[in-house]
Length: 301
Image 1: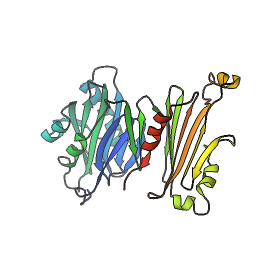
Image 2 (image 1 turned 60 degrees about the vertical axis):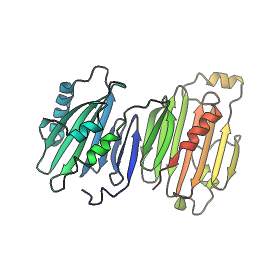
Image 3 (image 1 turned 135 degrees about the horizontal axis):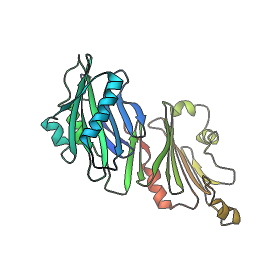
């Protein structure tokens, strides 16, 4: 365990319907549509997987699936475990059942968390290596007390790696790609598409060219007929569909968008280039898009 864990910063992860706070030194090792592993493959700290249940949550059914999965992965038996008072207090709004399993070099304590409001069932477990001091009854409850599996409002936050954004809940994740120098997330909702992009380091990408030159090399750069407004660190285009025959015909074509709005900006402070592309078959509300565009940012270091 990191000796400075208690003094280190904490940050938030918000991904596909769930969110929680974690020590900043715990990084995302693996990310799936409904799965997160925090730490590294060799030294995992936390694992969470979740989904919506069509049936009332069954601890016995879930624990059997868990037992088979863990035995296959770790050749270790799963035993029931009664969470401590601190764990239960952190999850007092959920139905909670605990489990534990051990190997010679590590131990795991976890919970199956069921929410009656959103019907989401989440499996959360924490890992600790045999030669480390205990953090299960200190750090873990603090993580769990911040756990949220649904929103009561109309917006949903997305916060992974170094990016933050807010989207209406009806936008669902379609595709995503993360790497050290490039990030892309694409969301879809009823014929509307919002795409987020991030490139880094900007100092290298813009070392011998302006932002507009970099923008012209991107696949999201619009055609020549699109009006644009630009300055040294911000470029924005909007292409509004006409009301001709082709526009009416293209509205019935899947995957064809006639409205486009693109923003590309150089975040000098964080050494990043950020871009958002909004697409639809009809013009999207400008104030609505302004709110989405302004929410997209690099998290404070």
